Amino acid sequence: MSRAQFRALVASFFAGLVGSGAILLFINSMMIGPVTKEFGWGRGSFGLVLMLGVVANAVGVVITGRLADRYGIRRIVIPGILFYAAALASMSLATASTYVFLYTIVGLSACTQGPQLYAKVISAWFTGSRALALAIVAVGAGLGATIWPQYVAMIDEHYGWRGGWVGLGIAVVVVALPVCVLFLREPKIQSNSALERTRAENELRGLTSDRVLRTRSFWLITIAQCLSTIAFSGIIANSVLLFTERGVDLGIARGFLAAVGLGGIIGRLLSGALLDRFNTPRISILFFAAPLVALFIVGGTNNGSLLILAAAIFGLGLGSETEIAGYFFSRYFGLRAYAATYSMSFALFALGAGFGPVLVGKLFDASGNYVVAISVLQVLAAVSVVLMALLGPFVYDVMVREAAPASGVSGVVQGS
Image 1: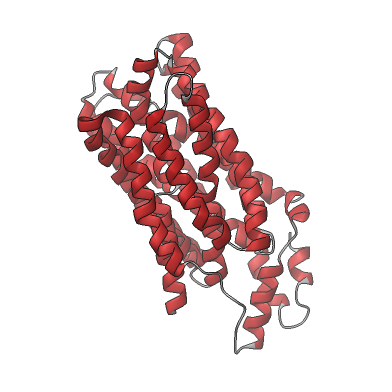
Image 2: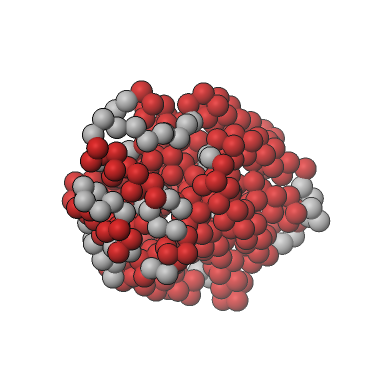
C-alpha cells in the first residue's frame, strides 16, 4: 500500500466514523422516546419526520454525486462536513413546530457525508484489494454505530436529548474535518505498465449514467438494497422501545445497538475479504440473508442473550451491504459515472432507511404491537436475498482484463 492510498483510507475511515450511516440511523432510536414524549407525538408521526429528512437526503445525494464526478470529491466533502455539523447541532434548538424543518436540513446536509462519495475515492485508489479497502472504510461506520449511541447516552444524562445533538455536531468537526483537509485526494492515472495504465483508464471511463440505468444489474442491486434497508431501519429505529415494552432491560436494549455496530465491523471485513478472494457476487447472498435470520430471532424471543446474538447477525448484513454495493458498482459499471450512479442507488437506499421507521411506526399504531411489522420486514428481507441471487458474474472487471491489451473500452461496454 502506497502512502497516498493509506492517506485516502485514513481520511475515508474517519469520515465514515461520523457519517450519516453511523449517526442518523442509530441515534434516532434513542431520540424517539424523549422527543415523542416532549412533543406529544405518536411513533408514526416521528417516523414521518425521519422520512422527510430522508427525502431531502435522497435529492441531495443525487445532486452531490453528479457534482463530485464533475468537480471532484474535496470540493463537496470539506464544506459539507461543516454544513452537516452545524445542522446536527441546530437540532438542539428544535421545538414541536420547527423539529421537522431542522431535521429536513439535517437530512440534506448528510448527503455530503454518505458512503457513496468516499467509495469513489477508494475505488479509484484500489484495484486488487478494492473490496477489502472499501470494507475497512465501512468499518468506520460500524465503529461509529457502536460509539455514538453510548456517547449520546452519557450526554443525555446531564444535558438531555438536545445536548446530544450538540455533542454530535462537535464530534463531526473534530473527527472528520482535519483528516479530510490533510489527506483526502483523488488519484491521477499513472502507471509504468501499459496494460495497467490501459486498465485504469478503462475503469475510469466505464459506462455513462444512462447506460448504467439501463442495465439489469443496477436495478437488482438497488432494489435489493432498498428492501433490505427498510427491514434494517424499521427494527433499529424502534429497537429500544420494541424491547423495553416487551420487558427487556433497558441496558440490553441499548446493548442491541452496540452489538449491531460490532457485528457490522465483522461483516464489513469478512465480506470484503471474501469478495477479493472469490470475486463472485454470490458472496453477497450470505450477508443479505443475515437480517432475515435476525428478524426471526427478534420475532420469537425476549431472551437478552439471543437478542444480542440477533443484533450481531443483523450487523453482519447492515455492515456489509453498502460496502458490497459500492464494490459491485465499480465492478459492473466502472468509475466514469461512479459517484452519480451510485448516488442514485444510494438515494433509494436512503428512502428505504426513511420508510422503514414510518412503516413499523404506522403498523404499531394500528395494531398496538410489533408482530405484524416484524412479519412484513421478514418478507422484504427474503425478497432482497432472491434479487441478489439473480445477479450475474462480475463481467466488467473480467472484460477489462481481457480487452485492455487489444481493444480498450469496447469489451467493457459490451459487458454491461
